[in-house]
Image (cartoon, rainbow, N blue to C red):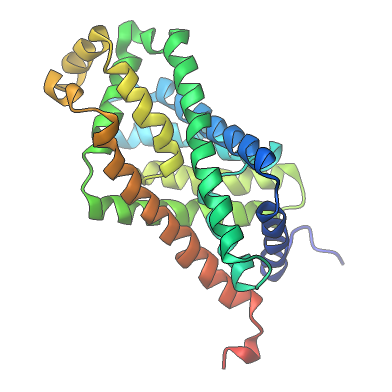
Length: 281
């Protein structure tokens, strides 16, 4: 009887075949798919922020945000998109000698910056849409709060948090590919991403949305004032929010995401499920 899902061995093979396709995408198509993925993740971040901005209990806020944020990855998987964190799994195709290191790096670099552009596009539209005015500017204040928190995380913590995040994201992608129907894919994506949001782990593409939006919000005095009122964030902290000050966060979180996706998931799962057992002994 045919199984209603793919086995782990089939998952890895299917993903490797998909990764070969990803590696050989024309540049223009890769950029557009990267833009879409960055925008999709930004949508997830945006709506979850609106939902939780007024909740002071951290655990409750993250639990609620985690029920909404997964829509971003669902859109990437079901509609199509090139997401940097998920594409770290392309290491498996490299290990299987199906793609070259050059092709792997080309994809990751193009997709990374395409994700950034997609997130920035949504940031800009949201800023001018008036969404940050909700709650008398409380959503804008929340955007500042999130950005300040992300840009002040210590480097080692950022790396460790990035590792934990992309373990769950890549597992969500692998689980989604185990399902043969849309409902199964949605549930497979939902729970690992819910866990990552509740854990408060760092995702570089999500940060491409959160940090620039906080920078934009910090340019408006009314949001700065509201951030001071609600969260005790000073004007000096808002002034310290700059593109330059955000670069270390992106660097260390990205390193963590790469390690989490490539080593903790890609390499291990390739060795376990793809390599023949007799080759391991």
